[in-house]
Image (cartoon, rainbow, N blue to C red):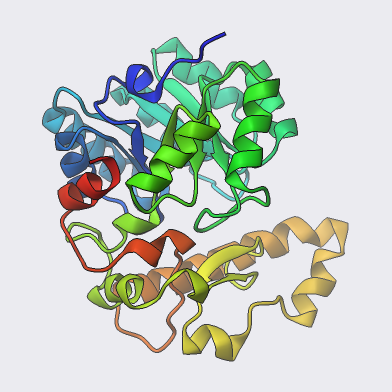
Length: 316
């Protein structure tokens, strides 16, 4: 069975989603992305209040152009205490799509489909892909081992082919796309489109410091390392002198507490909160504590550019 292309799923010109990035993504980026013919997505957690989230949706609806599409990312596990209220706002206000991460998307799929919103689910392996397929997901985001942030463990070609051969859902590849050749490669493996994040960090419109943007220009793929020190789950960051100093492994105490079944959940939630606060400070202020999340696709980032030019590099 031929799978629906991303362009037809979202009514966009090019098969690209500007990936949701914590602290980085904002409405300005998404508006410029839509004008350029791609879809844009923002983490709901980038908004502290439901009123701010509602205002962002209304702004994007007003700015929406033909050939553009917008959505929001929901963390659907217990670490996100705002999840149910965020889902309600997204459904009440109306968005084009929702991307779910880190948990079961069952409730999100059920509620979103009632109001005609498509749901794409982050997966890192076939087992979870088959699970979200059974729940009625509209597509899967195949998070491979080249992705930034919380990445998968399987290379893009293997993961895309495995998901295509064993599920009926369209596969959107996430990770390892920094230029047109990378995009074409993912499509040749069988992806219907791609989700691209890290190249957009160094955009004029991104909501982070100039230092963070410049780091994406100055560092490359070889400078990306995995750390357990942000959220407790391995996450890719730029290997700055500060990251080298504090190390990338959990402390002995965190490791010990994580082995305790009754304490594990709470340790993870506290570590997630502390890590996100540290990341927020590094992303928005000048500080020696530089923990900058990025993926290896910053290799192709040679200058801080407008979103429209970054899109153009990817699709033309």
